[in-house]
Length: 593
Image (cartoon, helix red, strand yellow):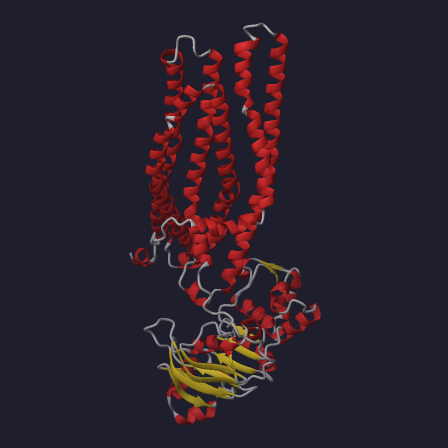
């Protein structure tokens, strides 16, 4: 089916393991270095205190019990209890510190990632499913936080723990300690074999999970369209395929991950068996006491514990490095629409707009506008009409600098829009799109979105001007009515009227209405016309409208087609020419009649 072939699935696994990712991540870790060092200090004390237990046990077995020294035995027991108590307390304190550090790291990474996403161009969002972006901000950041906090500390701690175990172990018996160390080369070969396989497998899980989330998010947003076209079964089949591939990738990755622990455990069991064989048989003849063998066996068990822990850390590290790569891949996405190094503040806009030989295309081999030139004087209202895809919305997008031109210049009051700061440019512009976006929150918050210091009186006045006050006042909480995500409780017409109020309240110098009345019924639009006239008065405005009857009074009407301006003039002038606009207008009037 077509639906199965149009969804882009797997991303290419092209980034090799690179320690630069870790060095870059260290920026987030350094901020909390003091807390992490203190946590490491607590852990080290707890670990060292716990290492006295086998020596205490050896002393009890070889000295206190054979000599029936009850006082020494009681002292050793008290020391043993104290060492375990200190170890547990210090480990608990360290856990609390690192939990806070981990959450702080999550906050910092997510903050930087979100701020970067806010600056990316429309093109970035046009080219990517939103679900894939969302999973990086939420899931991936959560996954890597423990690796960057507890993971790094545990690597240091377990390494130190391993060194101290070796020191304590050699202090008990050198020959048996060498037997224990003979298993290290075997472990090194095993870990080298499994490393790359693990990383590739978990990176594949990352990709499959990203695809699954993207498709899920897309279908949640498009649930109504799915039900309208009765696509539930087909979509469920596609989702089942994506979910199945995610499951298969996960099982493949888990297969390698699950080899780490039993691999190390089996090596540890063999080495502990060798301790008893060598201690009782090879080195026998009474050279090794039971207490010594048990102490070395205990240290051997402890010796493999940090190695197993390091193996688990390494396992988790490999699992999450793919997520870290994806996070930095997003952060490295170039900001194509940004302030120039020498950008200046846009002066208060009077409203003269000039296209000077502008050419533009969304793709390199597709030209939407080809050497377009025109000038709009301050306060003029300009209507853009023409067939779908001719470039009407492209023109207004270039005025707002949502995209950069491929050639020529867009000037406002003689200032090149690419040479001024984006905030100073867009803060003086009001843009009403066909798809009026409503945020979660109150209606008042949505209207105030473009002017945070607006008073309730100003909000009500703007709402009355655009005919929104009546329906808002009849809602159960009026302006304080909570609206859900994307304004699901509102009709399309109501959402557009709220957007009108939001735009009017921001008091823009240049107003852009891109099919802004398309979801409003004719009766409401007629009532709104007075408010629209108030909005247009004294402002340079660009209007894209499907219903041509609404733009007859504009100062200029431009017919856009074939990459340029085919006709330009007032409604009366273009009707007299009997060209493209005339045919479009008469055809629409016939349809209405």
